[in-house]
Length: 133
Image (cartoon, rainbow, N blue to C red):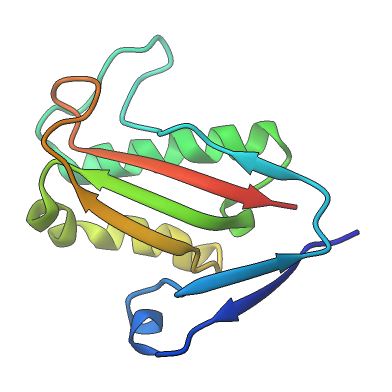
């Protein structure tokens, strides 16, 4: 049974920013809850210290790898949480994330939070997702 997605947008301003206020999912058979993904290399080493754009790109790559392990893609995301140590810097490079989501034709319900630090020193951004198929 294929998942059916219905966007819930009582206001429309969020659509211009690339996210939906809510996503109602029905008929799905699988849900994947992804741990936070950061700019970590395959051996667990932090990468791209101080480079928000590069960290964001690698974090998305790492999220896509988790999704691929469940035979899913970014198109399956229904929820995305973005944690960052520098909100202004993230906004300056948000096109990296928005471009990838746009290419996947998905606008998951999204929350962005500014935090004091992430688990690994030097990391600037962490992405946590929920996907359905």
